[in-house]
Length: 52
Image 1: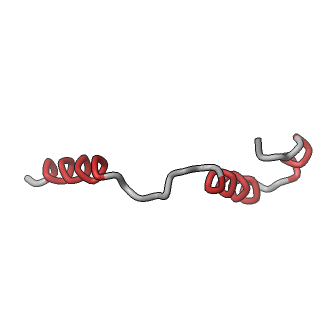
Image 2: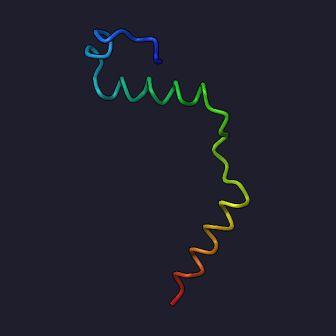
């Protein structure tokens, strides 16, 4: 998936692997990181329930 061989993966530090994985996800995801209006509504409803 990432284009690395098993030996390549073994040679990477955890930080290097996670950076490569994050880059792969960003490059291959259609998600722009913004919340949808439904997600905003859900968060707002949750926050309203926190008021005592």
